Length: 308
Image (cartoon, rainbow, N blue to C red; front, side, top):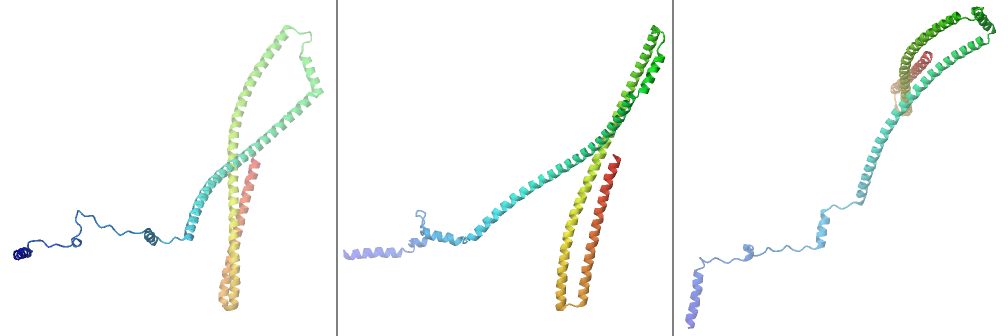
């Protein structure tokens, strides 16, 4: 029994060994990889300290000075933008106020000239009325003329009393006088209408002339102010240039004491003198221009005063 048992087991073993070519060889699971039924292996756990360390290593180190400077720059940019906007608004308001001021000055000048003309006209009318009043008072107080009128009336009146024919004659003369007065009043109305039309036309022409004169005077004043401002700017510039030239001259003198030839000094001195002559010529031209503008303004004012 033992023999067969060993033989049987061995036969079985030999049969297994002989069938190794058909049976698949068993391999480890790690070499074949996980099967679909099995879950993948979990990654290794990372602690919070390691995660913070990774984040800190990825980000650049924060600079408090740079952050403060960036915040200050942003704040200054915002303040500059606000100031620029306020400046533009103020500039618009200033332009509007300058236009209103110019219009008010023009209106004031027009009203002043118009009032001056009207005052002269009223003065002439007053003098004429005073002369007529004096003549009327003299006629009313002239007793010799009154006696002559009385004698003339007495001579025309009838001697033997007043009759109907004399009354009718007086009525006819009165009617003629009334008709003549009516025609005279109509003529006076027509003459007044013509005079009114002429006065209106002259008034409109005078208003146009006054406005033109005021505009011209304002333009001349603006040009004079602009020229004066340009003169001040040029004077400051040339004074600055003169100071620079004087500094250059002083430096040249110092340089001449050290090492400089006479020819170079002569050239620099000639150049400096030419610059000074140019400054004098420009100053003279500016003075002539301003004097010409003053004469033109005075002539326009005197001409307008003579015309009025």
